[in-house]
Amino acid sequence: MKKVLTIAGFDPSGWAGVQADVRTFEAFSSMGLSVITSLTAQNRKVVKAVQAIPPAFVKKEITAVLSEFDPDAVKIGMLGSFGNVTMLTRFIRERNLKNIVLDPVIRSSSGHPLLEKKGVTALREMLPLATVVTPNVPEASIISGAVIKKIKDVEDAAEMIFALGPANVLIKGGHLNGDPVDVLYNGTGFEYYEGKRIRAGREILHGTGCVLSSAIAAGLARERPVGKAVADARAYLIKTILRRLKED
Ligand code: PXL
Image 1: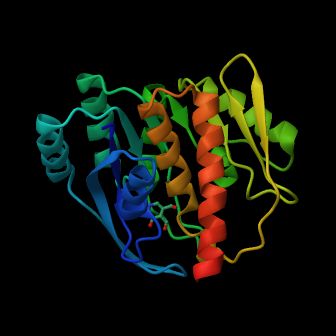
Image 2: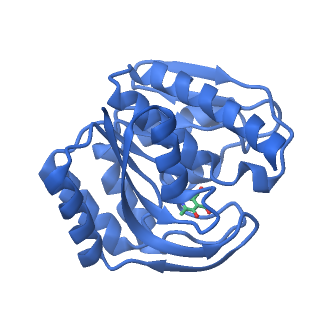
């Protein structure tokens, strides 16, 4: 069985964070391993408080899990603090972990910071470790410094983020107007994943970035090429959103 590790935060609602990640890994028939970097007190509407786990303890978690298991892929989500970003960057480089999907979580959709400010700068140094980095438009703007309003801006931001070192950049188009287009850039060409906008409130969409990046990691674990892992992950996410709409 393939094993996929998530390094991310805890969301009590379970719609985002490590619980959403592990459910996604299991939906792809993989074993889910998790390292928690931060706790949040939130529901699907609002983040009340965030508490980062000290880096020394996060290091004990990841050391423990890796001393028994050798993951086929790693998803990195909310890290919470500068100290966690720098510790994990060093740790992942030293351990030479492969198939890394980095979801650069910076703030919640309600606007609450999920990473302290200097952590955002440090996140740039984590980018070279990523097989795929999956920013949404606001995150891509923050990382690249670019204003993103249309597809051409998305392409320019993808090139700028690619220059920081990841092997692939996937900018998710959901925050732009109209039907969403996700853009994948691998340094040579762009791939466009066109979707139909699903009418769903913020609660239903809570944690969709977590599910997508985890599904991509599960695909990489199964040795899918990046473009195929992204396509499969998008199909799974669309199915998940439609199911949530029905069940909510
Ligand atoms: O979707 C961003 C995100 C990631 N990880 C955790 C979160 C959130 C959003 O709220 O709580 C733990």
